[in-house]
Length: 376
Image 1 (tube, rainbow, N blue to C red):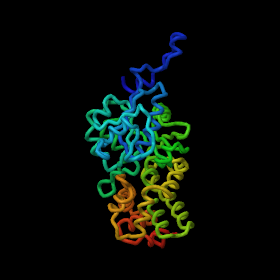
Image 2 (image 1 turned 180 degrees about the vertical axis):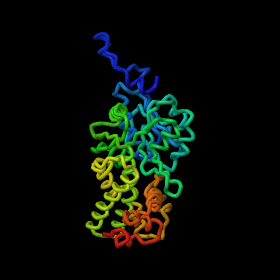
Image 3 (image 1 turned 135 degrees about the horizontal axis):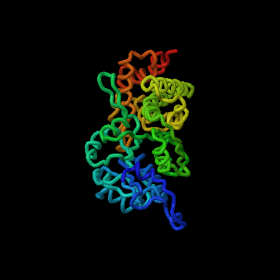
């Protein structure tokens, strides 16, 4: 049966015996698959696996597609399935027994009702090509990918990651989950919040149950594009925060980056998607994610290194510091600047424009904090 058929069944129980058993039959329970097994993918898989094991809405086994690689002569999938630990991307964190690593993406999505995309956006197109003929109509999708923008026609046209996923898989929509979420902290059980953007209230309720836990609080909103764009733009602003810290500038300067960055992020989202909701900036995906990313995220860390030695390439810094993870800020910065330039809006976005100048080495990281980025 389709997802919509399963979650809409509301027939009352016919007897006391029937009331005592789960309302969703095993054959009708929703199968969930996670696509991605990096630091964040494994951390969220740990939460989802725990939830599907206890909730009657979902099948008890959680597939996680893993890009196969060898660690000390052993396949990573074998390590995860035998030792219940992702030693490459989340070392030292025990994973639930019902989490099954699958190296074949087509096999991982077979029969799935809910797909959770949590992989670097650089690999999304290839994955969608692989699974597009294996995803059933009516499948529910949710993206945890931050910073995926497809900008074409010189900045005239924009598609977000959720739009790309929905279009390529012939789905009516794709939800998004973003927030102030540092993977290692989430995996350690430290309390965090996240924002789920989903148009359909019924789907939002189901997905919120799938992700929500005692230490991971999920709030919902229909503002899909607001949630999604904040998740990408904060990576660009985090570059300026990294420049500030790498140069040893005062906390006052960094505070100005955060304030002006949030203003420019909010303004750009409203210009690109007028239906977006201003209150989204106050959610975890907005101000909270910006703060976290500007003090501890990978884009902040790499930007610190770049500020200390701007002669280095972003690729070299990524390879040195990220242990195989991908840097999103610089590529998102390029797309954002194309959108700004097409609309002749550089004067409205001085900070974002200055960050782009530093990333492309047109100006120095120090220049971001002069009139280039801090125009009155």
